[in-house]
Length: 560
Image (cartoon, rainbow, N blue to C red; front, side, top):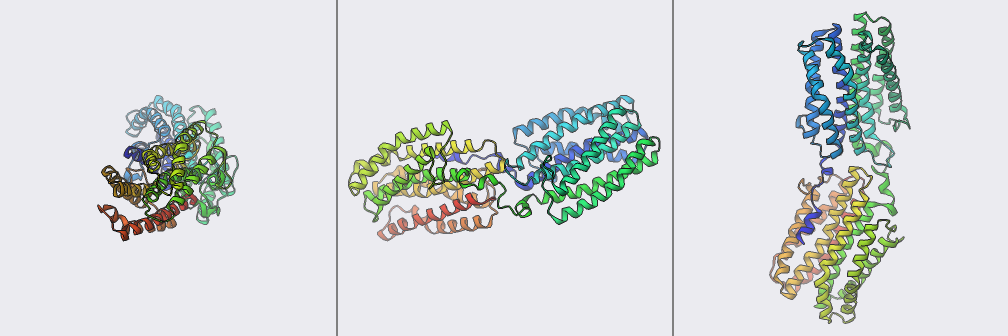
């Protein structure tokens, strides 16, 4: 049984990346695109003999930063605030970038050190900078997808991506001007130059006013608007010089002035990118949305709601079994009636998973795997439910019925947990990592409800049936509850749980923690007097109720 619980808390890489870390990754991966063009531009300026000393210094800084960032995206880098990439797609793409980068790195290093200034080197740079840029852009796209849910109305991650693309375009324009002036594939250079200028205008306008094609929303934050205005003004002053540099290709002074102005535009755009990065966590405020993930807010099709109810089934298997002991040993009034009540709720919810239930806000599952698991559970449930009825109708006197319940409740729990895993796996298809993270949190928090009942059932088995194995199991369950509660509050990398930051969730989990600290020592006793037993049976449902409230808040919240 311990293995079953541990399987629920295996760390997922999706928890490793917070919104802030994701925004940083998008920003810096996007900056890599710009560096491919900046290095190419600086190398060409050295070839053309423009400001060679400064460009030599800039080139070294650029290739050093590109190499450091590429390694940081792959393995993590504290100084860059990058965490390692654990996404198979991103990791694979970064390795493809590295394959292109190694020979490109060698060439730009040769230019910077003046070891190889032959035409072949510059032709190589001209031929290979765009494939490197393209591969790096694919990495940015993959990161961006992590921050964009399929139904989200606001693509702040996409805003960071495209605002960052403007930085790259300033350097691409400069590079194309130099390629044209040096007669290195001038027709293609001019064509690329014109499309780059056009794309710069389109993205800048889209950041201001929105653009359906680019999936951009109109910018609302005053600080970003102000910075975009500064960048736009700088860009408007620079554009006329582009045409002049094409006409007067031998005017080094004019070319130098153009490139300095383009660098100024890049500087201003980079500030805007930083503002977008910082604003990722404030998406709800920007467009007055109540959700980061709109698709989660429709109750009937709400995956978090589904995981919540499926997780609740696990708890009911243990609550019913605990009440069976209370009923069988007359430990508390109404235990037999409550036992049957919660057994009926379990059966109703299971049917709702299969056929749908408006009252429970459940749609009929379309998953064949889930349907097969539900059929399997129903096979186990039938004799289990019959034993519950026998125990209730005999007012707790049918000890064979109680024996059957205690012998088979873990089997029912295990299959109920399998159904949770199936629903979670099915729900994880075509959703973002943030959404997957929220489902996992609901699952783990929901499991806490079950643990409150399981540990009490096991404790009662020990006290009333003198089952030492139950006491050992109870100690493990109790330890897991404490550890998971601490992890939900403070975060735990081993469990794959982030630290709670949502104030409502934090307050409710603190309530659970305070209540737990008052009763946890009761479970350590070898025997209970009547007053202690009454306290345990009275407070345990309260602990369950408060934990259930925490799960409900988590289900309905858009952040954790």
